[in-house]
Amino acid sequence: MDQSENNPSEESNLPDSGKSQKATLLVQNQADFELEFYQSILKVNPDYVDVLRVLGNLLTLKGKYAEGLAIDKRLVRLRPADALAHYNLACSYSLLKRVEMSLKTLRLAVELGYADFRYMKEDTDLESIRHDPRFRQLIKECEGR
Image 1 (cartoon, rainbow, N blue to C red):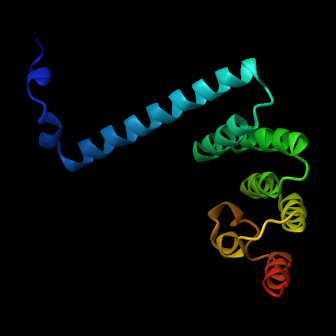
Image 2 (image 1 turned 60 degrees about the vertical axis):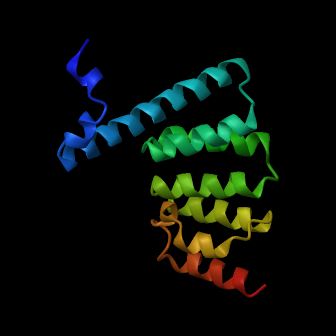
């Protein structure tokens, strides 16, 4: 039997940077597992909306913005009246610095009923449009309703 198997507290003996690296690796491995898992579900059922939502979020968290954008576009095609799907698409456009499309899609999300303006003002995914006067105008219009 390996020495580490006998000592369950071995991790506590690691320097803080070692613990941090191990935790980061575990999170990365979990995210990779989840990506593969959800992608395998989509092979069987490519229009599974709930799985597409989760997969889009995972791809964004992993920094795979172009892949996340493709998923968000699929969601909007499947659910054209879904305000949250349009909001997430606007976020994907923003992450890819596609300002015009982000603003246009964000406005549509609001028109479809997206109303969490406090979150919208703080959402880091929208950083590339946050200082655009059109974004501020949209927020102003929405808060005035």
